[in-house]
Amino acid sequence: MRRRATVHDRERLWGWLFVSPMAVVLGLFLALPVFMAIWVSLLDWNGQSNPFTGGEADFVGLDNYRALLTQDGLDRTLFATSLRNNAYYVLLAVPLATSAGLLLALVVNQRVLKGRGLARTTFYFPSVTSSIAVATVFLFLFQGSGAVNNLLSWVGVEGPNWLNDPRGVTWVLLGGLGLVDPDNPSASLAAHDFLGLPLTEWLAGPSVALLTLVLMATWTTSGTFMLIFLAALQNIPRELEEAAALDGVGRRRMLWHVILPSIRPVVFLVLTLALIGSWQVFDMVYVMGQGSPANTTLTPAFLSYSSAFDSADFGQGAAVAFLLFAIILTLVLLQRRLLRERGPGRDRLRDRGRRGTSQRSRA
Image 1 (spheres, one colour):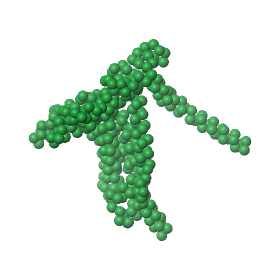
Image 2 (cartoon, helix red, strand yellow):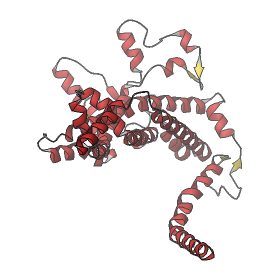
Image 3 (cartoon, one colour):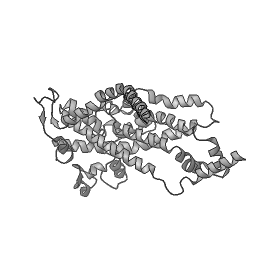
């Protein structure tokens, strides 16, 4: 027993020895900066002095968080506006990018498809293209004299300057149907607010500029999700699909009751990556107007950058970053809980297919 304990202690010591270089690197470049940022979020600091030795950095406690969440003012309004914009961005970009990636994976996974290698390369190419370059191209496409308006003019439709229209598409569409006034949708809704922003602003929907960002994000990320889904689809036993087909299962039921349950961990991975990436969107916003028009493309990530480096309020910028971290963590945990739950009979066809496969193997 003593000898076993000695060997076990040696193995543990060697394990910590091999892990220590990476632990030191993570501690210096990840854990330590996080704790430093937490301290900065409690300060009124302009970035011109050392925040850990006093000087021009004043300790204000939770005032930066109160200014964003509870105190009426411009800071709270901008933060609520960024949350509204990013919420619409997430609600549109995550389902679209995930569905597009899964659809592309199902297409290129077909054995009868000719040129599958070329198709995979074509679909994946936008994912390796610089997001700055893609944002610049989209900026030229949707501006007043861009290619989109020129194409619309050929069919007799004179398009507006898409990227400079600050109105939400919800009120614009309802106004076009004559149901509401796009400029003054509802006085009763405007009388109520959430986080300092009227309900009419929360329900206005995304602007056309934000929809352009959603389209661009779907185009650039669906290729990466396609490769992840494709790897998962190729790990599904072929006999499982054949057994389900022999039982008369159609393509739609095959997708919902056989394929998706079999790749559920991968679906969770893709949704998590899409959710985190959507809440952290920054580069496209920076290139395509830095929040314009009228802050309809402002996001918390860009607000954190703007507060710190444009307004020299690094404390508030750090506070926005940690509130964004709390939102992402909460949504990821909620998503994990929802995807872990199973409905009754959800995997019945998959189990039948596996039993059929085992019976055929024994025969």
